[in-house]
Image (cartoon, rainbow, N blue to C red):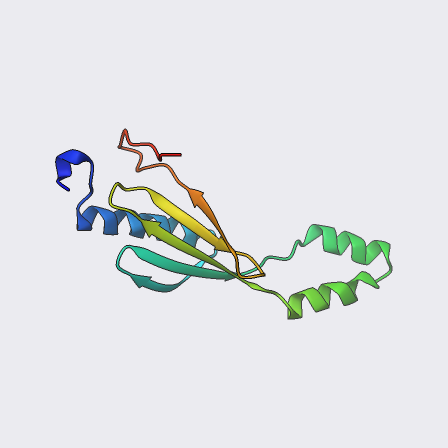
Length: 117
């Protein structure tokens, strides 16, 4: 494919991947690995603070047992970012049973390309 047909160069794809990784790093994700035009990010699943504090006070501290169990057994969320030749970014979130959910993202902001459904 040539550049005229809508394909991005390797440098452009790498730059787009680095931008997306940086965006997710600001949200608390850590980079597990980067290979080619794909990156694997991970983070520990968050536990809501205010709701748990409220329930702890309402139940006179009994809810604290549930909170401690949730903290000790937090799952690690994984996210796979992939940039294709047209500049589309695909995000795949892992779920507890090991299945992946794929979400198509828009092309880079300076582009007229849209993801195909």
